[in-house]
Image 1: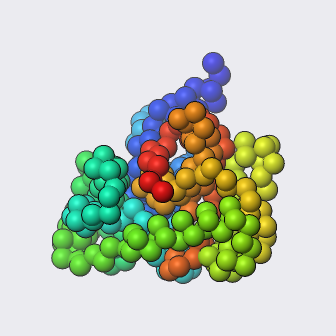
Image 2 (image 1 turned 30 degrees about the vertical axis):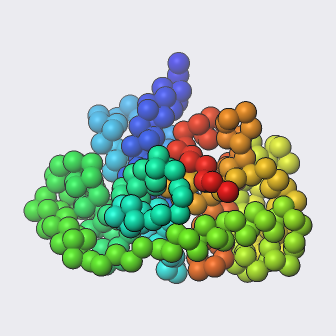
Image 3 (image 1 turned 180 degrees about the horizontal axis):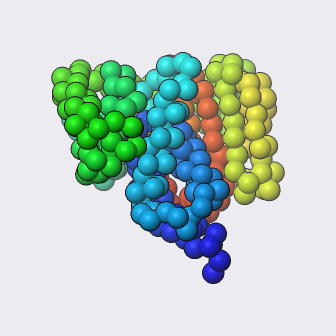
Length: 290
């Protein structure tokens, strides 16, 4: 095994933890995956033989990547589907299976702590790494470029704001209704209805496996995306994908394709198609009742 293969193996061992950190920082599965991929690219270009503590290096890399991504956001996105308080989920009585409710509660409780707009990127990082992942303040300080005392103060300020903030849960029923309407319009070939459910600047991305199977690599705009998906979602089911709203194609009891959706208001603003079965097997997928 050469060095790159060894690095790849070590990175895959730590991928779930890195993804969890990124998700709690960014509040978006799609952006979390982007942050983890950027971390791998940085590692593959680094002089790995000089890294004494690979786990710490990866934590630093993904943390700084998330800070850069938070700073680069040019518009406010709605709080992700996953960011609903467990208390709110427990009160829903829509016939959902109790096990399914538990899956939702697990995913939303983890994301809740990091979605408040009152936190600065550095405060988010200090809070997430220390309060969720037990990273010492001296390590956090080296990531954000401050003293351990300052890192402690950041986490403390963030903790007070989190405890004192009144978090408004996103409208789960509305987002689920958007997904149901999207599937119905796509399956029925209702192009006009489909257009109304897509943001004018909606984006679509597909992984390499899906592209080889015939999916477009990338699209932008409601018209292009609608023409690509219409009539091609027969058999797809609404699902939670790592706590985010999405669609899953189930065959033989296994997800063979997954689309992660981002919903803002009453429209879909982003879609990511995953066809890589190895990648899909790493996802926590809970198919929702129709």
